Length: 202
View 1 (cartoon, one colour):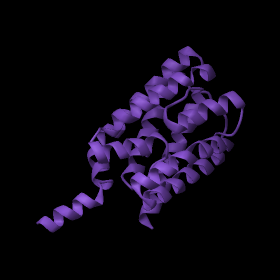
View 2 (cartoon, one colour; view 1 turned 45 degrees about the vertical axis):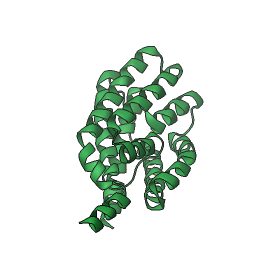
View 3 (tube, one colour; view 1 turned 180 degrees about the horizontal axis):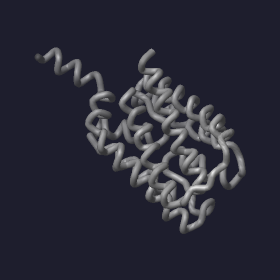
View 4 (tube, helix red, strand yellow; view 1 turned 180 degrees about the vertical axis):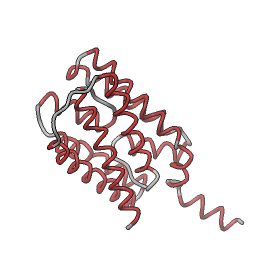
């Protein structure tokens, strides 16, 4: 029960970060960034687009991270989707693009890190980052940055070159925060088989 509460609070943090990014008219990386770009282009709901984009990644999660992690991720994605819909009822504000990119990125970075540390994610590149960390010990912050940078390049048509450049600041902030917590994230998402083998050997 406590873990679920932490996951919900993490989603609250991320949804607030997304709200700041939306108010700045910038994008970020991952499936959240793709969803923002598409929602700008189609004038559609971020929540619906975000939920739909993540569906294919659940398959990877089932095979590589297990059902427990996948169900937690589905719960987190659904929770964030609902929260971003609710948060749209807040008064509309305009935030400087540079400031919004930095602040929104930092907030999203903390929210994502807390989700990772509770055995969950927001799908997409988050799943890929944790799989690569578990199997090859690759820094999840670096994986997230690489994927996010590619997403921002594809999203330039929705926000323009200048705001696209500002958007890079958001993924730098996110990757830095995740990298800071990479040790705790690795510990929480360690492959149980090697741990069990080590316990038997001792």
